[in-house]
Image (cartoon, rainbow, N blue to C red; front, top):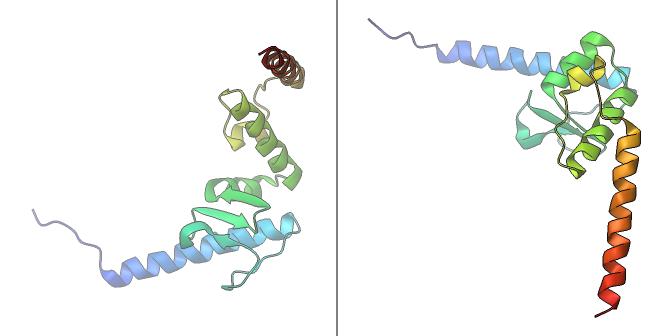
Length: 138
């Protein structure tokens, strides 16, 4: 049986179509979130590692992957919701808790209550203060 090999012209065409689709989604997200959009070499944001369709960095303010870009555009998800998600992930990471996907978060999955994070922060502060006092003894 002969192995099928995709022609180079088809590969190039698929790549061009993919990049156009990714950049069109990115443009739409930029409009929705009222962000600057400039893909020129000295532009505001860029595809990380020059891989179109992977992760986009809006000048260090927002980093977002293609899956989340598509989800936001297709579901009219606000920039504030995305910021809330990133803040929630940072809190989870601080205490080594698992965090949901962005899609699950945006759809309202169960979350660790803020009160639990507040309590953990208070306990951490107490522990840090106690350690500081103990160091003074030696």
